[in-house]
Amino acid sequence: MESVAAVSAADRDSLPARLADRAVCIGPAPAGQSYLRPEVLVAAARGTGCDAIHPGYGFLSERAAFQRLCTDAGLTFVGPDADAIEQMGDKIRAIAVARKAGVPVVPGKNPIGAVDEFLTAADQVGYPCLIKAAAGGGGRGMRVVRRAGEGAVALQSAQAEAKAAFGDGTLYMEKYIERARHVEIQILADAHGNVCHLFERDCSVQRRHQKLIEEAPSPSLSPRLRSEMAQAALALARAARYRNAGTVEFVYDVEAERFYFLEMNTRVQVEHPVTEAVTGIDIVQEQLRIAAGEPLSFGQPDVRLDGHAIECRINAEDAWKGFLPSPGTITQWDVPRAEGIRVDTHCERGYRVPPFYDSMIAKVISHGRTREEAIARMRSCLASFGVGGVATTVPFLRKAIAHPRFEQGEVTTTWVERELLSDIGAQANG
Ligand code: ADP
Ligand code: ADP
Ligand code: MG
Image (cartoon, rainbow, N blue to C red; front, top):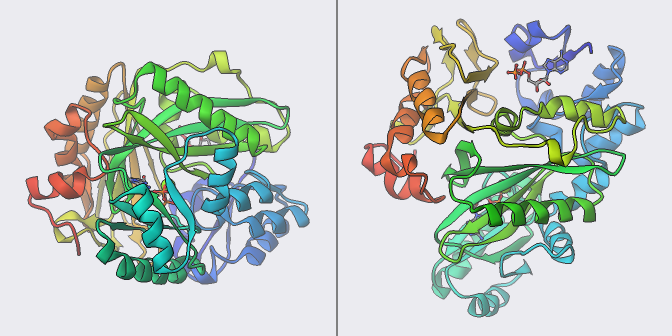
């Protein structure tokens, strides 16, 4: 399969541009003038003779209008159809689909308009509760409300943030699960009616509701809950007539030992390599097969878990300065190669980390026969991972991986901010 990389001027000489069979420049560095311009991307694809577009996991990957534009131009969009993207992109609609499919949803109310509406609902579900944005993503537009008096301010600021980030200020409310883990199920569905799950990923190591470390399988799930969660995800995918790769996210209440549907992401996710490691299934390859109209290359009984995998996201940020982004030129780039280690990156020595985009510069994935072995391999990889010229989260990740709470596999989604950062003397906010 030949590939054409669509790159902005900032990425013209980048590693992915050179690795692709061809690279085409789609505009200046700021994303609004390049990566976020659907018409330009479609024109570039047509002009270079492409028959399909893989949207990756950022930018336009969950934009229904982009899917439609591709289809109208005779290009195959490697992902679900526009209706599925639209339906799941509206979290309130997604919750309705989940409920109808018999999937447990978090007690709450949607949508939420005025303050009194919120207060009445909060009295019913109980505090603390969480205000969320219907169009949300990336952990933005969320506010925890611990008592009635905080409601008005929280609603106002959540709405302003949601409007600015997504152009849509619609809010809803859920019970806030205090001791929670984030567990998600990877789904693959083809056009021939095959819907399979690839088990779960645990993404409980988060800061500001954003994932930092992910692993598969989850250290916290019993075999019974694992199977129930997978069945719930399959039921949702079937109810939505979903096609291609998708992830059904759940919040797991550690105390009640119950899980609830959060949202569905209609694309391949950053953390998909941990699933590839423990199942041996190449998710991107399956995405391409599905998009080409071929059946999945495996059936559900073929999907087995082999060992344990962990992914660390390496960002060009300084954890000791409140995770301040650190763009600049990479002067040293020593990436260890070792058994059971995969590194996905677009970086190399001499690369300029642009200030325009997400600060993730690499993903390190370790795979071992056991969780202990995966941790040990990750630890030795991070120990010799040498980056110069920009600050990275490698020193932070070394400490996180070595922390007894992580080693014991018992962290919840607030662990980083409530415990880890102060334990290692780093700052929570910039
Ligand atoms: P986004 O679209 O921003 O990813 P999600 O609904 O997936 O929004 O939530 C992001 C994160 O916020 C979750 O991984 C979880 O840590 C936390 N979260 C969301 N809803 C709840 C809830 N009801 N209770 C506790 N934590 C929650
Ligand atoms: P890995 O680190 O597992 O070797 P790569 O970083 O090479 O994976 O590739 C990432 C994903 O991109 C893979 O899942 C693979 O399916 C896909 N991929 C890589 N090269 C090509 C290609 N030439 N054509 C189509 N897909 C590719
Ligand atoms: Mg999410």
